[in-house]
Length: 162
Image 1 (spheres, rainbow, N blue to C red):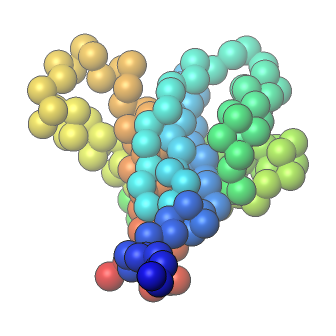
Image 2: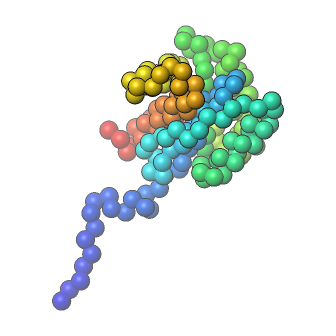
Image 3: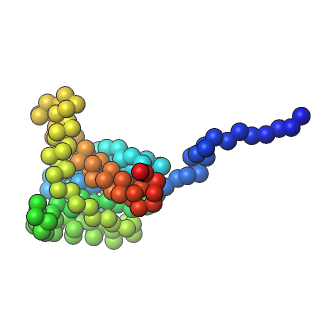
């Protein structure tokens, strides 16, 4: 009697791992954090990091998260003006991102985040959350939106998504 193994199309998903990314929505008071799944398809909110007095402490906390999730890169929301020009917040965010890249040795991808916080609030409203509850999660939802846009664009470049 012959033996054979049935293999469904795309069945070897375990070996189809893609690089994981950490997504960040960097603000003055909080940093929203999201991470991609191991297939590189979806972004999930992880946490909201309350900023400390020292940016170095924030950088170290994010470096620990990078190691914990085994990420290959970091996607940082770049808060440009609606016109596309560099805002003062964008300059601060870019300096923070550069310091994070230097500390972790990971590539940093700046990603246009215009209107993501507004979109995050809209999503939370639709999910039935009251405005008072938004502060706890809006930054991580915004980070997930930033990261998801990045993942979608990466998928379009590699032909993974239609």
